[in-house]
Image (cartoon, rainbow over the protein chains, first blue to last red):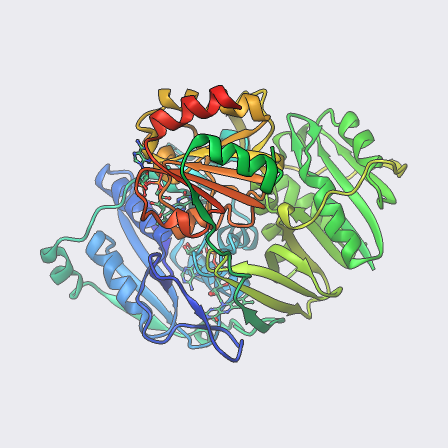
Amino acid sequence: MKILVAVKRVIDYNVKIRVKADHSDVDLTNVKMAMNPFCEIAVEEAVRLKEKGVATEVVAVSIGPKAAQEQLRTALALGADRALHIETDERAESLAVAKLLAKVVDAEQPGLVILGKQAIDTDNNQTGQMLAALTNLPQGTFASEVAVDGDKVNVTREIDGGLQTIALTLPAIVTTDLRLNEPRYAKLPDIMKAKKKPMDVKTPADYGVEVASKVSLLKVESPAERKGGIKVASVDELIDKLKNEAKVL
Amino acid sequence: MSILVLADLHEGQLAGATAHVVAAAKAIGGDIDVLIAGEGVQAAADAAAKLDGVSKVRVADNAVYAHQLAEPMGALLVELAGDYTHVLASASTTGKNVLPRLAALKDVSQLSDVIGVESADTFKRSIYAGNAIATVKSDDVLKVMTVRTTAFDAVGDSGSATVEAVDVVVENTQSSFVKQELAQSDRPELGGAKVVISGGRGMGNGDNFKLLNGIADKLGAAVGASRAAVDAGFVPNDMQVGQTGKIVAPDLYIAVGISGAIQHLAGMKDSKVIVAINKDDEAPIFQVADYGLVGDLFEILPELESKL
Ligand SMILES: Cc1cc2nc3c(=O)[nH]c(=O)nc-3n(C[C@H](O)[C@H](O)[C@H](O)COP(=O)(O)OP(=O)(O)OC[C@H]3O[C@@H](n4cnc5c(N)ncnc54)[C@H](O)[C@@H]3O)c2cc1C
Ligand SMILES: Cc1cc2nc3c(=O)[nH]c(=O)nc-3n(C[C@H](O)[C@H](O)[C@H](O)COP(=O)(O)OP(=O)(O)OC[C@H]3O[C@@H](n4cnc5c(N)ncnc54)[C@H](O)[C@@H]3O)c2cc1C
C-alpha cells in the first residue's frame, strides 16, 4: 500500500509573530519556518506503517513556494521515499490545496492519505476533510491511533467529549492529532541521503487547478494586549483580591 | 438572508454550544433554522425550538446520522444547503469534522473559528494561535463557517420555533462507529464553565489532580490541563486547553503549574480574570495573569481549598 503525506511549510511554532504596521498581513520576513508540527506527526505515522510492513511506499507532497522544498527534504530525511512539490507563490488556501491533493490522489492511488489536523499558522483545520469530500473517501480526523486491518482502518479520534473509534474502508483520509506518535528527529546520514531522493516539481496549472480564492484578507490586527497584573504574597491576599477587587468569587 | 445552524449534540441532548452559534447567526441577521441530525433526537429538537431567534428546527432522525459521522452528515448538509446563504456550526470537533466537507462539495471556502461578525460577508477570525486577528471577506455564494462559541454570548430560551422532520436519508457504506469512551464528570463542561482551574506538568502526576478537583468542587469549576499534562498521561485529551485543544474564556481561570507557552495562552487569554500559581517567578504565565502567586503548588492548593 502506498501512503501519501501532505506537509505544509509554516512559521516555527516557537516564534511569536508580529502584525505589519500597515495591517495588511502578519510580518513573515526573516521568520524561522519549519514543517507544521501536525505534518511531522503525519510523516512519522506513515514511516512507522512502512517499517511495520503495512505500507510499501511513502510519498510526501507540499504545495507552496520554492522554499517548501526544505520541508519536503525533511520529510525525505525522516523516511519518505519520494516527494512532490507543487510550486506556487500564490496564497493557496485549504480548498485549492484540497483540490490539488485530490488530483494527486487520483494520479497516485494511495491506500491512505495522512495530513495534519490543522496548520498552526491559519489554524483552519479543514484541508483533510475537504480532500475526503472531493475524493469521495471516508475520513478519520484528529487521530490518536491508526490501525490498518486488511481492507479497513480503525481510527481512534480525539473528540471534545473524549475518544471515539470508527472503522473506515480503504482507501481513506486520516488527519493527525498530537497524541498519535512522537516524531523522530532526522539523523545526519539520513539528511545526506535525503538529498538524493527523487523530488518532482509541478505547478497548479499542470493539474488545471485555479489557486485564487473568493475570500479576501481585508486586514490583520494585533489582539488587545493583555497586561500583566500584580503578584500577591499569600493565599489570603489572593482570596481577598478575587472577592473584593475582581469580584469573581 | 437565511441561515442554517448545525446543532451540536452531547449524548443525544442539545449541547450548550448551539445557543452561542445561534447568537452569531443573529449577528448576521435573517431567518435562522437549526438542523438536528442524529438518532433519537426529539428532546434535542424541542430544546432547540426554545432558542431565541430560531424560526424553524429541522430534524433528521435516522440511524445513519447516529454519532454524527462525517460522511452522512456532509451528504445531508449538501442536500439542505441550497435553501441557505450561510451554514454555521460551532468550532467543536463535530463542526470541524463535518463542515469542510460541505464547503468542498459546494466549491466554496470555509471560514474557521469566526470570532466576530462585521456584516453578512465580512468576519473576524483569529490566526497564529490568537496572535493576530484577520478580517476576511467572502464573496462565495454560500458562506460556510465554524464559530468560536466563547466569542458570542448564548441566546436565551424563551423562543418557540416550529419543528419539522427532514426526510432526507443518505447511504453510508464507508464509515462505521466502533466505540467511544466519553469522560464522565459532574462538573460543568470546559467550554461553558464560569470558572476553570487547569493543571500543567508541575502537577507531577495524575493523582495530584485531586488537589484541583477539591477546589473545582468548591467553585463549581471545570478542570482543564496543559498539553504537557495530557501528553504525560496525567489526564485525558478532552481536558486540554489551548491552540490545538479547547478554547475557554471563563470569568476566572486559574493556571497551576503551567508555564504559559503561547499555545496554552491561545486557549485561555480571553478569560476575564487570570490567576497563576507557579514556583518560578519568571514563568511567562505571570505576564498575562491578573494575580500571580509564586510558590509550591503542593502547599498552596490545600491552603486555598481550606480557605475558600
Ligand atoms: C484569509 C486567509 C489569509 C491567508 N493569508 C495567508 C498569508 O498571509 N500567507 C500565507 O502563506 N498563506 C495565507 N493563507 C493560506 C494559508 O496559509 C494556507 O495555505 C491555507 O489556508 C491551507 O492551509 P490550512 O491552514 O487551511 O490547512 P489546515 O486545514 O489547517 O491544514 C491541515 C493539513 O493540511 C495539509 N496542508 C495544508 N496546506 C498544505 C500545503 N500547502 N501543502 C501540503 N499540505 C498542506 C497539511 O497536512 C496540514 O497539516 C491565507 C488563507 C486565508 C483563508
Ligand atoms: C503543535 C503544538 C500544539 C500545541 N498545543 C498546545 C495546546 O493546545 N495546549 C497547551 O497547553 N500546550 C500546547 N502545546 C505545548 C506547549 O508548547 C507547551 O509545551 C505546554 O503548554 C507546556 O505545558 P506546561 O506549562 O504544563 O509544562 P512546562 O512548560 O513544563 O511548565 C511546567 C510549569 O510548572 C511549574 N512547576 C513545577 N513544579 C511546580 C510546583 N511544585 N509548584 C508550582 N509550580 C510548579 C514550573 O515552574 C513550570 O513553569 C503545543 C505545542 C505544539 C508544538
